[in-house]
Each structure stands twice: as structure tokens, then as C-alpha cells.
Amino acid sequence: MRLNDLATKPHERLAAHLAQRMTEVNALIAERMASRHAPRIPEVTAHLVEAGGKRLRPLLTLASAEMCGYDGPFDVHLAATVEFIHTATLLHDDVVDESAQRRGRPTANLLYDNKSSVLVGDYLFARSFQLMVETGSLRVLDILSNASATIAEGEVLQLTAARDLRTDEAIYLQVVRGKTAALFSAATEVGGVIASAPEEQVNALFAYGDALGISFQIVDDLLDYQGDAGKTGKNVGDDFRERKLTLPVIKAVAQADEGERAFWARTIEKGDQREGDLEEALRLLQRHGALEATRQDALQYAQSAKVALGKLPDHPLRDMLLELADYVVARVS
Image (cartoon, rainbow, N blue to C red; front, side, top):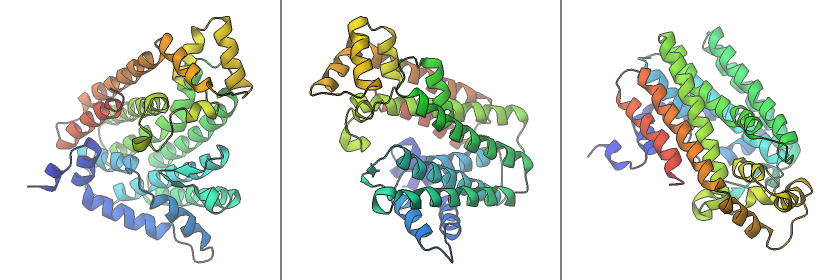
């Protein structure tokens, strides 16, 4: 039996197919996160890197490059780059959100301090730009630097939008495109660029990553209200307790009567949460069909991702990426 046959989930089959390249990516990450002068840097980074995670973004880069026929060394550099950018944003996010747990473990800012998390995140951003430059591709540099700026912009927008009941679905989508989808689409797009793929294929890879990232984030937001804490690592209602205006709540607020709107204003905008409020929030989400409507949105974006792959050549990896889009939304089927 082949290794691929042992993997049951799409991201596991993807990891099995790309295992050799991912070994090189992990070695490069370990090499570049080292610091001769500041041992705190590898300590903080290793805590997060070793906590697990699917390494989905670097896998997307490797898969996109191989699917487009690339046989050079720089897909490894780009895969490490997107993982460094992702890790840097996680370090910064945990400080901004005052998080105490990630992937079932204490966050770096809790174990060390906020200053260390922010500065190590900055270091990883700098390392990611060094890796980009080594590819010698200005277009790659343009794509990934733009993605880094878009991620930061999305996070800042979320600061002002997350607790404002005037936030609508268009603003939510803008936040999601920034904080999540921008790195997904950059990860897939640079794989095609480094392989010198036809422009139609590069654009298709971007579209796939963008739609997959949006679907991924919508599902994450939905799981906060109906997920299994043992599987997600989050307690049901964490976003509600943190007063985050995610898509299910945005949909419910849009249909709220005066009394319901007052409830959302008290709990989300003012942060005056009382015993039984989470149960009331869940009741309102169910009453207005907000959870099912959110799931349908996730399904539509997953379908858009699959349609985009139609412009890519036949390849076993294309089939895995198609299955990955289905798997993302299957978590809330």
C-alpha cells in the first residue's frame, strides 16, 4: 500500500504526496528562524511551529508549482515564505486578541510576553522578505509583499468593524479577504508564477486560493457557533464572548427587530454580557436561519474554488485540491 492510500483527508493526501518537498521546507524554516544573537527568537517561533497545524498554505504553494510543471528549487523558498508570513500574523493576532490559547496550547505571548511576540513576528516578516528576494522574481516579490500589506490592512479594518453593528457583509468580506484569503491566494498564485505557467493558469490559481480562503474563514466563523470544541480547539461562543461580529451574527442583525437589535448592541457593541446571553444569541441565529445561510455562502465559495481549477491541467494534485475545497465546507455539513 502506498503512503497516499493511508491518508484519508484531502490535506493529508496532499501532505503525503508532497512529503519530500515539505521536509525541505521544514528544514529551511528551522534554518531561517535561527538567530545567533537573540535566542528568544527560535524559542518563540518553535513554540508555535511545533504546536502542529496542517501547514496548508505552504502545501498549496508546492502543489501549485508542481501542478504547473515546476522542477526548480524555489518552490521550497516560497512555501517557507508563506509559512513565515502566516506564523508572524499569528504571533501578532494573539497579542491583538489577548488570546491565551492556540492549537490547544498556551500562546507565545502568554508564555513569554507581548513584546517578544510582536518583535519575533517582525523578525519572521523580515525573514520572509529575504526568502522572496532569493527567488530573483520581482513578480513574486510584488505578490507576496502586496499580500502582507493586505493582511495588515484587513486586521486593522477588523479592529474598527468587529464590534460595530453597522458592519455589513461587504465589509466582512473585505476583512476576510485581507486577514485570510490574501495569503491563500498569494500562496497558490506564486506557485504558478515560479513555474512560468500561462497567465490563464496563474489567474486560475489566484481565484482558487481566494475562494478557498474565504470559504475557510466563513467555516471557521460558523464552527464557533456549532463546532465540536474537542476538534476545533475553541469553545462554542468564543467569538461571541470576544464580541466579534462575524458572518452569522451579521446575517441575524440584518433581520433583527428592535428588541433583538438592542440585544446585539448590548452584548457586542457595549460588551455587557450576562448569563444566558450565549444561549439567546444561538436562538436568534437559528430563528433567522443565519447559520444555514452562512453555510450556504461557504459552499458557494468552495464551488467557485473548484470551478477555477477547471483551467488547470489534469494532475493528481488538481484532484486533491478539488477535494480540499469540499473538505473545508464538509466540516459543517
